[in-house]
Length: 211
Image 1 (cartoon, one colour):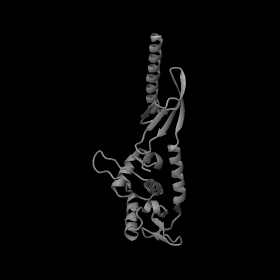
Image 2: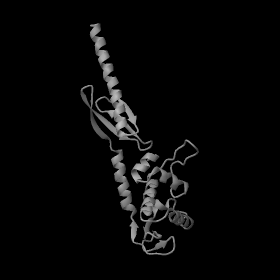
Image 3: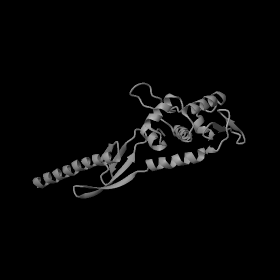
Image 4: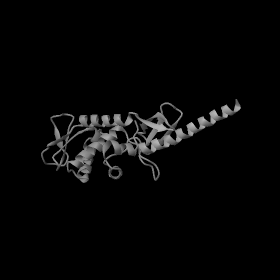
């Protein structure tokens, strides 16, 4: 599954500015598609989202971005087979240094040399949380709206790749629109439906005149 920047922000809680900065510093690397110049966009995988969540948690626990970078540099040198350390390894921190649990769970590696760990960043729980948030975003949402005195159902679906929302009328499938926000999408489908009902009126009026 491919995720665009807006969905990444919504799922990870990392701001757009932070995402851009962390990418520029090599903390996270978009694994689907990197920006290839002005006007192009990055595309992220679910594993990238996990990495961003781990980086955010480390920052929330007081680990500086410089320390995260140093830890990743050490891991990439000593564990080149691990392509995405933040998404594949279990990190521990005491707010001062960063530890990593080796594939042997009895072996803990201090990537910054010193300290005692007290916080465990459990990947399993983090991944489950992300999957839950993703399920919420991907689940269509139904809204009842009134158009020309008629009640219809608007089905909103979030676009995980490009951001924004697609909206379709349940009773009139041909009526489709979109918007950057839920409200904008609903406003746009209202316009589409108003035009549709107006066209219906014209058709009926035309038939009445021809009888």
